[in-house]
Amino acid sequence: MLEGYLMTPRDEVLSALRGEAVGKVPASSVTQVGIVQAMEQIGAVWPQAHYDPEKMARVGTALYKMAGLKTARIPFCLTVEAEAMGADINIGTIDKQPSIARHPFATADEVAIPPDFLYRGRIQAVLAATKLLKRNVPDLPVIVGTTGPFTLAGHLIGIEKYLLWTIKQRDSVFKVLDVANKACIEYTKAILDAGADVVSISDPSASPELMSPKDFASLVKPKLIELSNTISTRHAVGVLHICGMAQKIIKDMAATGFDALSIEEKVDIAAAKQMIGSKPTMVGNVSAARTLFSGTPDAVREEAKRAIAAGINVVAPGCGIAPRTPLANVQALVSAAQ
Image (cartoon, rainbow, N blue to C red; front, top):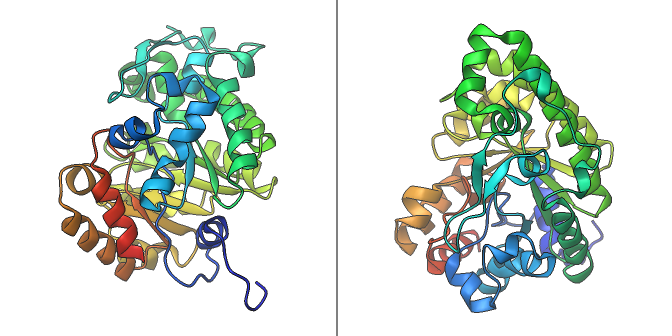
């Protein structure tokens, strides 16, 4: 960096995610950022913002404009890919995110990527919003979230059935996971072509609360390595988010090759850093539910300060922000970093 050069929020966040030196730990978010209070103020709300690129982009930057959170982050759920592969979606409301209403496949042999996959559902809306953000807010990091391969596989089959297959039908598990990851890679390439700076992959169904660390290492880790390679070859930043007690799999998460790991409050940052070293970097781990949603601004500031003191590289919500989270609490998160 040139002497005297003033870093933009984009510079700060991308540098921090890569483990490069920054003046202060930035406050950002690699997870869901839509909150009702902000959406109502800007006049762009769910569910319309899930389909309209202009409204999607406005919601994705609202918390920067209103709270200083250094992010332009879209979309706002983990159902985009499943919808494009044939799942029926409950599109939700202003304070409820989209969810899977019907899984499209019953058997592993049925699972396939539609030939027009990138032109189905909301994918083109996400790509158009990415281009809008890249053009209209060049000083912000454009962060696009995607669904991880194991979670997508569960959306296609049904997660309870799919988890049972890991015990009784391993061949079927591998077959569906392979197709799901090919879809993830195809979508990731399109996102990068649209101009995303960061691809944030969330794979909550791969959490140790749902599957064994051994299965994570044998089933999910190889697919995540393929995804991280796709991102790194385009010189973009890759972030991997897994919910829950991810400390049990933190070494395998680190070995996937992502630049940064997004973690919840259940992970001890200092202990995790002792296990994996300085890279990948770590993002989080202020509780989205207990503190940002239910706590006070003072509680948010204290938890954020503890995360910074423990060595977090980017202080952020530990998971997707709840839609009814008070704006004042997001502002408190930012003030802790400043």
